[in-house]
Image 1 (tube, rainbow, N blue to C red):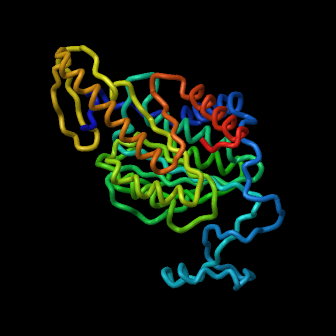
Image 2: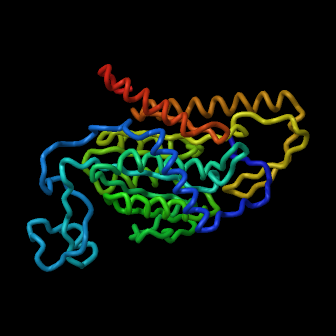
Image 3: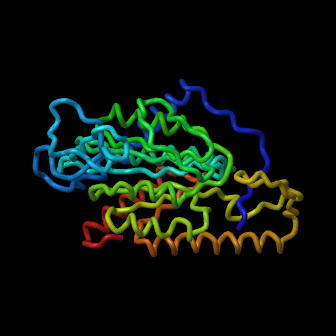
Length: 331
């Protein structure tokens, strides 16, 4: 089903100080609602530097040469060493889809705002206790760009840019990550969700948690296989962001709609009940296909809507997952 959105004037982007206020309010809401719901999800309890491989960095005098990362050294011609991750740390990675189809919303929020809110909630749930969190961000266009470092500001972005924000621990670093996510500009063009998810598979990482946040409107065959591959090593949560107009059309007469990724403009006669019924049936079939693909990949599935309380839906989901674990089940 084509991705179409009613034609509206461009949504003004919040000023930096307003973005900070929004993020602070998000943190307060998440803290009040979700605090204490995710405890004990660690890979081990042993202190020390650990033996699991982490990110690579440039060699510095005094580094242990036994930790040289020879493949990266050969590719870059600059000596690199492989960091190790403590066994007591939980490592979480976010794959955030900010392609053009996310810059839309007819409910209380834009879909991209729900993506940022979900990222804030997941960050709060996992950053405590020295846990590490990182992210990869796709802004549309399909072309890949080298991984880039960040220092708490918006990462560079452009058509087809896939940006990696390295996994780090600490609340200050987590807030910097959220500021970088909130400051990422959505670019025109179709994104490659499969390539975005594949960034979590390469390089191979220690077992942890992977969270994919998207509207999953890309064809399932594009992202289902990378999702299955990701699930083979990590616990995977898929957060699907949905707007009510993607599920059904209102009866408002002639409605101009535009595909936000291709720019194609169409006029739809929504007064036709048969057209609205066909649209709703096609939308339901599309969502069923997405749910089946996620279920086939073994990922936990959470759907957030722009016209509902996303935080309440997330609280219910986390509580249900916690209850399932106490009963000895995984879903």
